[in-house]
Length: 231
Image (spheres, rainbow, N blue to C red):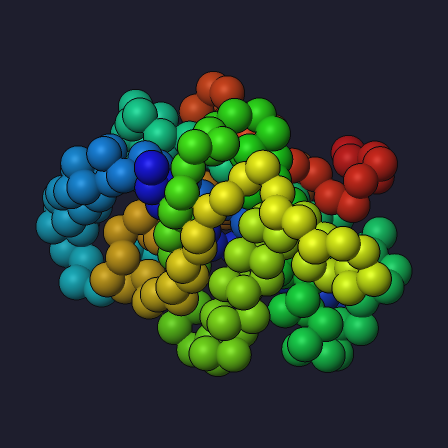
């Protein structure tokens, strides 16, 4: 059984970001059987809106009025897929060297792992899932980062104590292969949807709670670091 995850981020993983304290990955979790229909439907809607507005390039969330945001989010809420989020209160992070790209990448890998872990724990991803394909927006990402996340997810989920070399080696109860793709959102409509969801969730955290009603009921949202109080 195969699942797709589409993710984009909003906010900045840096303590001096002036527009808010939160970093969010947001997006969609889809079953393989639903992927093509949802992708085609959302693409059709976005292209219709672009035609109405005379937009030839990507329909950017940052340029979107509330009516368009509402229209797109209403459509996303109607699909048979899950809306997923992992949120980080950045000023509470005390062990990251934000000037180190390696440190930041390592932490991003970790929070994506925590999100997938949450999806497994709440049965959004069933134990019988054998393949997860992850699409993330970032056309300029280094291949080393792609390999890093891909290998990290495979090892952490498939081998219970892979990173504990002093212990006896044994497999976990969740056996799943992972593929990670960093894509240009200009040509990937579900990454554009992920961008809209991540931006909306980030705005909610930064003082616009009225947008909450535009998200699909029953969405998954993990807040990190563990035990930190959010507003």
